Amino acid sequence: MRKLILLFYLLLLNSFSSVSQEDKVALDLLNLMSDKYKKMNGFTSSFTYSMKNLSEDITDSFSGKISVKDDKYILYIEGQKIINDSKTVWTYLDELNEVTISDFDPSEQDISINNVFEIYKDGYRHKFISNVEGVSTVEIYPDDENKSYFKILFKILDNNFLSSFTVYDKSNSIFIYSIDDFLEEELNNELFTFDIKKYPDIEVIDFR
Image (cartoon, rainbow, N blue to C red; front, side):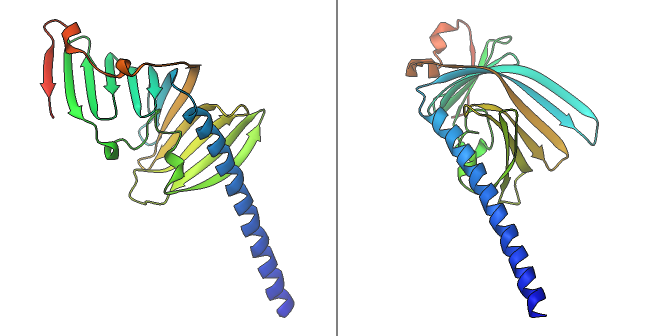
């Protein structure tokens, strides 16, 4: 009986050790990726967004472009230009020549292509899945059960660049963000403001 208990204990200990090693590999990969992006003075990336609802058999996709510097970004997506200087958000609709202005609330920005490089650092468990042909797959799981999603999957290249990330929603939907191209570049702070004077006859909706 003692031998059986000892064997069970050793198997459990070995399993725990294996999981811990996987967690460390996953965290190391995520840290290397995050450090690479945080050291940059700025970058611009084109991306493709895809959505699949497995229950309703619905799919959707579109392309976008984003420029990021620290906590600031400019996002071009589906006829919208969204500028965030980390305090104020301007959403400009080119077709209507209309801009909506609001205060930036970080708590409303759960996952996005500009904060995904650090989201794993607090409130998540990590797991290394595999490395196939120079692409590592890492998954993270939120500790907060009230989150609308239960898993985020990262594809990280051997050069520590992020290739894509996928959000698995509890509504049985999958959201995929694929990075199509990437350019590290110096970005001036002036880029991350919206100058209303440059848009004659613009309609301004200010929620501040």
